[in-house]
Length: 320
Image (cartoon, rainbow, N blue to C red):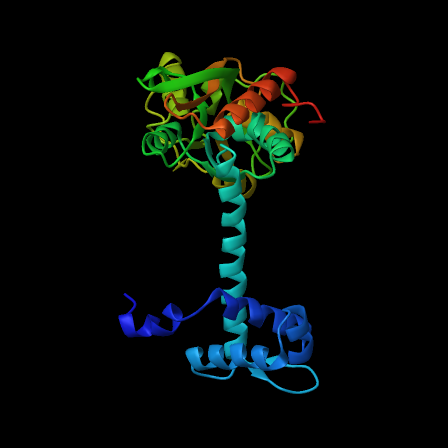
């Protein structure tokens, strides 16, 4: 915990100190910095001396052009961060004054990340550059918790019973299935088999989603129907990056949404096993709080819907 006396210098710090210091560093001389700040050289010297007194050590070395001391480098980093935050907040306040949300917080499952969210987000920000975005990727249950806590504005995930709770609105985007995928570490990577039988994969090293996810429940139901409910995965993960890494370094069979699997296969990162059975995932849609009247949420939902309907395989059209 930071002691009170350690923050005393920061309480006396003014925005003018930070602005002057950044201009001085860029200008290189007190004379040029004073001109850029529309003040006298003595006034610029005063602001610098005041800042050095606050920090308690020299921030520059003087010469033909000033050079930052190690302490000066730290103060410069502070100035860039603080003034950057102020600039962003100013823009966000302007957006709020126009009745628009300045920040949109989006959560998505794998299927949404692969199938529709990236392109919709790109088009959305081209049309509405004043809205910044926070993006997270998690299992649907965790995302819905974030929606309930108002930590997220919009969630893209499976439209099962959880999406029909009170005070939630939703819109279906596309249907998805579950695929089995392999990487370069698998004996199936170069296989030309037209069909792979699920029953023949019992002894493989499986990478599965966690037990509380819809994709895992759907997969377990299919395994039960095919007579091997006892199958224990070698790895359980909700992270697509972990799945990607493992299937290329070992002989694994991974479980993935079809939308994500097709996207990864198009990049050459994974190969989809052509199974003799279909494992249905279900509809994927967008969910938001019914009491959220944000214009940004409405606009983003419209972009998602537009992109999802534009093309089944290629996510979205090329232009905005």
